[in-house]
Length: 339
Ligand code: RAM
Image (cartoon, rainbow, N blue to C red):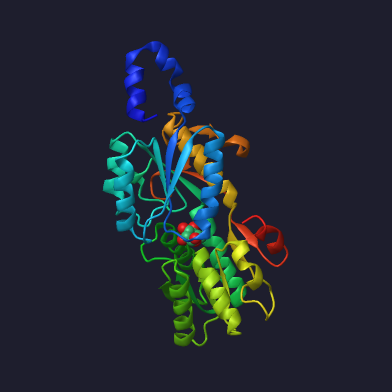
């Protein structure tokens, strides 16, 4: 049921007001889930646990992908969604600021707006479901680079698109940690390259990094698409350059190992099913008026337990799922079965 309709009913009678939250869920909350781009297993995995969770709660989900991993393509998707009767939109943003006008239009139309994975700015959302703290991810990545490079030498970052809100936040966190701590003084970040979350472009960018920096010790790819493409390229070419970043265990199985035969000693991600589930519960709670996205509110995310809304680095609010998880030769086989 649309928020506007709920408000109208609330104005109508006290009896309905008392029953309003139950009414919303009896009707079944109708949610649109918007990913960054199509054909990326990351969003398919997150979407599948999101949909399962919402359906188990009696709601429905439409999963929509933009034609390209750009803000413009997401604006087209949002335009279309706003004209329909959705209670909520949950989005992984392709740009921090460019979606603001459109997402404000959605909120003005009574649609609850949450985000997951990649946050649009604080004014563009009611709450953000952050898979792991932004600084925690930056710290894990820079420490992995430091460790794999042996504490010194050149490294490059292979990112997604240049506008990607989440990758840029993690890269900024890495840079800040490097600037503030002497420990990283002998690491040199030579380039941030962009593979646009496209396998072929990510492969081409890996090839160019190797050609331009013959002494490159490590590539850090904070994108599941980028790391999988780079892992294959480095391993197939027997490159001495090593890899880390954020990846899906299922896509990294054959490339993960701390020996010459494998391109990636270890990498990170987070609980993917948990991300879908928590995003679903948070979005339902927002649509039902159980939370508004304000600092300090709490809600129960099914069997994941109780979560508290905390302050995000960008001045908005967020719900942090947990810590980044490390994947290495010890656990990759088990984890690859999950996601
Ligand atoms: C890609 C996407 C996604 C990001 C992961 C790590 O799949 O860019 O937004 O969270 O990588």
